[in-house]
Every structure is written in structure tokens, then in C-alpha cells.
Length: 575
Ligand code: DGT
Ligand code: CA
Ligand code: CA
Image (cartoon, rainbow, N blue to C red; front, top):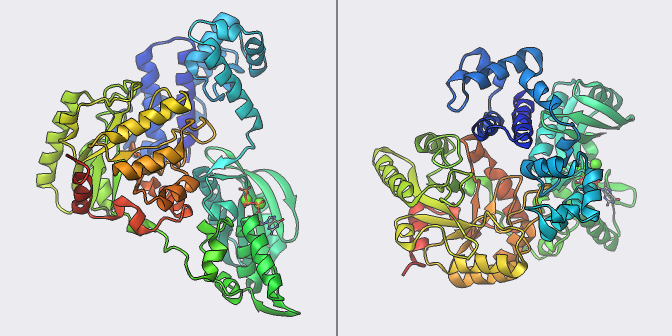
């Protein structure tokens, strides 16, 4: 699919235009088109060929022409022309966390900086801090951003890893002699970032399978190719990904799946237990002397070690082996337990579709309810709603509900927590809503005391039901706020406020460890997708996996309950 590459080109045009100081309206149009394209689940070429693309709102005539050009010629003239107007090294400055197009424009124009090396130079010389609009704090934040970039290990997000795994698995499936395919490693455990993708195959002719894999069209570079293992960098639509493929025998498939799923710490602990029982455990099986006593399926390995089966999501050696021994593993939440999505945007703020469209998609997904939570007025870039617009939206939602069957639309908001800790809407308006999410969208670099106080104060409000993405991190792009999570968790319990597990793979916020802390303190969690399109609703699984990695059960998550029960829950906080 060309969607991702195309989306990137539109974003890049917007970046360059912003650096050049061109028309704001056009820039935001390009960004919107980039987002629409990235969110479309169908192949853009097909949509173009069938004429459906022209009907998608937000894609105008000139964007359509550019998309057509790209599909035909593989490039866009306007994109190429824009790139000639700036030194291309400027684009790498945009990858520095904390450095947006405006910052790049400023350092380029005022300090003649065109590369990361030169930027480091002006930071050291103090001239960046002296630049109007920057100052010491911002300059040191950018220095940290550069360091972050330089030390980042090339780990990728879950969605990127999944895309690569799907590509390779689909390819392998078509080969002859393949009996089983299983994703292993950190991807199977749904860790928040992935170093490399591990795929196991049960097949007799290992060498042929590896050969076919390393010869595949999507392979960019072969790192190793042997009789049972191949390593390669493959090119997905969005990024290069390191993939390891291992071929094992059916007899050892369970043992290999167990071994290569890891984590390493979990395996080390498991092997200690084996040794204590005078057994030997490796990727080929569980052995008593020379006799193999388990190995075909994973379950029997755990069973023969005297343990309950441990789901991959828990295999981090964080107490799961002890719990398996005493039959006290939690019954983990599953995707099918989720009854609705409580964090959804529409085109009233920065989403792509209207209330009916997203409600219809939610119903198709089997949900019982959905809560519309558009941004509030201070989030101006996201076209946040004024009090008046929100009041109108509430009316629209109530009316739509009269016509709908099988799905309840809840009226909500994602209200900004302002710099002074107050909220962007008054209580009278909030009282009209079914569910209120509060979130910090500005001043994320503030001091620990400041960001923590803002969050705690928001929770004190009797109408605030949930804090969205509590740390504000964007994986690989923006560090989390320096927030006192223990204090946030304690206060959430005291104030009867839920904490969100944002399911977007860029966020996963709360992260697994924080979920675990929250659950132990008996905080209620909400898993929300933060969808900005119908496709965005599909991210729920990443959030469910993250909560489960924090040992969440169905009872720990509010949106496993009915809409009526959620209303009872929110009412109990209100005066
Ligand atoms: P990653 O790729 O860094 O996100 O993390 P993993 O967990 O996928 O690690 P990877 O790809 O290096 O290895 C896959 C699995 O193989 C790992 O989770 C456990 C197993 N493994 C690798 N090296 C060792 C080792 O030295 N000892 C043991 N017991 N297991 C290992
Ligand atoms: Ca791996
Ligand atoms: Ca690996």
C-alpha cells in the first residue's frame, strides 16, 4: 500500500512550507490530507481507480491531482520543487524531539544552522539560548532532544513491528511445506517498543524457507542466511524493520516458541526452576536425562514445571512465575471484554469524520456505546470547541440517540487542564456531560511540581472522570512529563477519578508498569483509543495488551461495564 509513503510526502511538504513561512491555510490542508491518507484502511490506489477517493471529505482537487501524480509517476512535482528551496539536511532537524518546523525556521534564518552538528555548535556557544523565543530552558530541552535522538537504539513502535510481522507471515504462508507460523519475541509479548521482530516457522526444509525469505521482494538487506535462521532488514510502507525468521521442527515447536518469546529474564528464571527439578530446558524441549518430556506445545512445558500456563503478555519476570506456582495469576482482560470506547474525536475538533460516521463504525465493531470527547477551546490548533459549540454538540448527540438502536452515544469532552490548573470549561457545562476527560496539552516540559499539581487539581473537580494520557509521552518523539505518578495514583483513588490507558501505539500511556501500580492501588482504568477516524477505533487492542501487561483484569477497567453502570459510576463523584 502506498498510503503511508504518500502521507509522509504530504507531511513533508507541510514541514518545508512551514520552514519557508508559507500560507498557514495551505499548510494545515496538507497536514489534514496526510492524516486522512494515513488513516484510510483501504489501498489508496484502489480508491483512486474506483473514484471513491474524490468523495472523501478533506481531499480537494489539487491534493487529488498530487495523489494521482504519485500513483502514476512515483513522485510529486510540487514536493520535489519544495525540497529544492531548502538544504535537505534541515529535515533531519525536524526529527529532534522538541524541534518543530517553527524552531527549524528560526535557527535556519537567524543562525544559519542547517544540520544537527551546527545546531549543537550554536547550543554550546549559547547563541540558541540568546535567540528570541528560545531562552536557556528551551535550548537545554533541545540539547536533551539531540541526545535522545543520538542514543535511541532504533527500536520501533508496536504498530510498525506488527505491520512487518504481518507482511512476512503472509509471505511465508504461501510457501509450500509450512506447518505453523508464530510470532515470538517482544512483539508477541506486546512490549511498548520492539528491537527486532522474531518469527518462528515449523517446516521440514529449513534452508528453502530461509532462502525464499531472504530473496523476498520486501527485503532490503540480508544480515544472515543459514540452514535454519535468516535475518534481514525489510522495508514496510512506513519503516525499515529487522526481522529474524527461524525454522524449527514440529516436535520442538512449543519449546522454541517458549524460548524465543522470552523475555530473557523470564527464561532464565524458568530454567532455574527446571534445574531445581533436575530437568533441562532449552529451545528444543524439556528433558529428563535424555528423554524429552515436553516440547511440542508451550502449555506442557509450564505444566511439567509445576506451573499454570503464563500468557506471553506477562512473561517479564515480574512475579508471574511465583503467581503461576501458587495458582494466583490474574485472569487478564481481553479485547472482547471492551464494551465501548470513551475517547473519540470527530471533525468538530481535529477528527476526520462526524458523529454518525464514527458511531456507525463503533456499532460495526460490536460496541454498545461510544463517548464523543472533542477538544476544548484552548486547544486552538486542534480546533477545540467553544462552550457554545459544545452545548450544541450535546444537543446533537441527544437527538441522534433518539434515532439510534443498539448503540448509545455518550456526550463528553477532552477538556484542557490549563496552566493555572483550572479547566477550559466551567462546571455548569461539564455537569451536562456524561463523561469528562481532562488532559494536559501544553506546558508538558514544566517542573515536576507544576505538572503534578495541575493533574491533581483537575482530579479534584467533581465532574472530571478520567485523566487522559497521564504522562503525555510520544514514543520515540517526546519524553514523558516529569510527573509524580505515585501521587497521581494516590489522588485518583481518593477523588474517584479513573486514569486512561491510551491505546494509540505512539502513546501507550499509562504504560504497563504504571498500570500495575494503579491497579495495586485500586485505581479504575479506562482504555481509550483517542481515535481521530473510524480506523482509529481499531487501536483498542494495543491498549488492552498494555493494561494486561500491567496485570489488569476485566474488573479493573471501566469500559468493560455497561453504559448505565458507567453513568452510576460517574454520578457517585458528583455533588
Ligand atoms: P527486542 O527484540 O529487543 O525487542 O526483545 P526480544 O525479547 O524480542 O529479544 P531478542 O529478539 O533478542 O530475542 C528473542 C528471545 O529469545 C528473547 O525474548 C528470549 C530469547 N533469548 C535471546 N537471547 C537469550 C539468552 O541469552 N538467554 C535466554 N534464556 N533467552 C534468550
Ligand atoms: Ca526481538
Ligand atoms: Ca531477534
